Image (tube, rainbow, N blue to C red; front, side):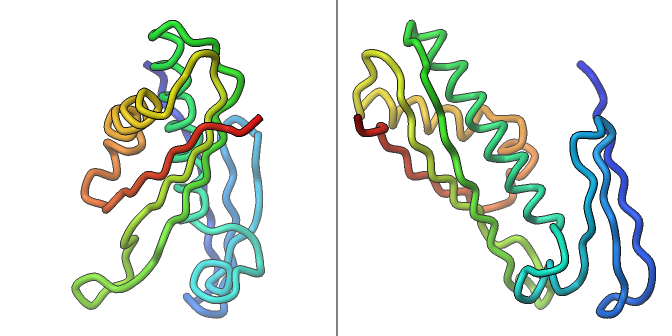
Length: 144
């Protein structure tokens, strides 16, 4: 297995400072700030948004893999991860992640989709890394 690298730099105090993140692959580099993290979302990305992107990507790949292994031809797996921030034990924390996915695959019915999606939720590497977080799942077949 390979190691993956990302970097972050922060300058200044918490509320007035600014930061930047860069993926080791070079696929993304951008700013983040207190405002983008805890307020209205302006000023760049934030760690929780990046966790959501990682989770949605990992989960989508896991669903596609499990469906392919079950003999389905996968057209698409579209997943959104909504990462919620709140208070836990008096400290800011990720309080939950809601995965919503829509899947298009040959010969797939809703019962099998629900089973595979639940298995993928538990088998996804990022889900396992976030094991202490409440992760909910809504899966549906793509229409048309």
